[in-house]
Length: 241
Ligand code: PEP
Image 1 (cartoon, rainbow, N blue to C red):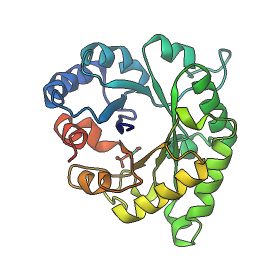
Image 2 (cartoon, helix red, strand yellow):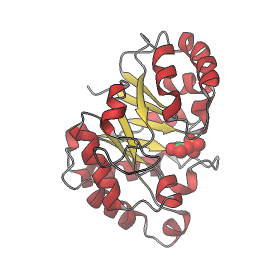
Image 3 (spheres, rainbow, N blue to C red):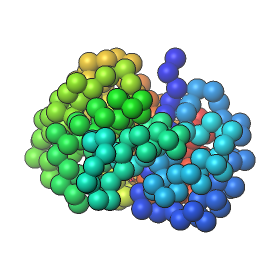
Image 4 (cartoon, rainbow, N blue to C red):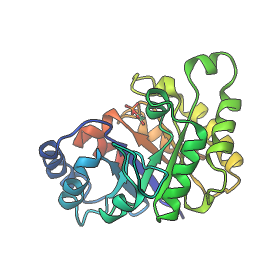
């Protein structure tokens, strides 16, 4: 059986000094983690070496928060897949709603990122999800279907994670109801067309909501922002029942 994937996205938080403190506190809290789950953390690029060194031997895998689609070149500020692999990174988030919004990332660019990630052996974590406006106007399914169709063109579904992240739930404290998150995750599984694809839910996941979310049949894991910055909260999430 596939493992549940519990991923933390630190966004633009955590210096190397803060990363060391996090790792020291987190390590003992996940020492008895059951075998049926995989924990990932996506720190800022600058903290990747520190986090891998300080969590060595714990089984926690390191993810990148994004990856460029080209191999190398004149792309100031960007990081390539080969550069990430060199640091032991195994996964890369693509299509998160923040770069979609702040850097106008398109589905076509996100698709290229996912393909390049796979070419280098990284597992892309494709984020999809609707805005509040789109939900209120009944466009949720159409929007997510399009993001899946365009984002996954020529992407191997057997080496992939998809995260359903309703934008209105991100950083707002409003976790999507577990049964509704489950319904959308089930639709995503169907649209991806590979029944064993890992489908995560993300959006204000916290220690109070994790058990209910992980009890759902179509939710195979979670992508956690704010609560992954606190070792005790993230460890409780990783130790879901
Ligand atoms: C995220 O940014 O992917 C996220 C889910 O954030 P939060 O858990 O803070 O809502």
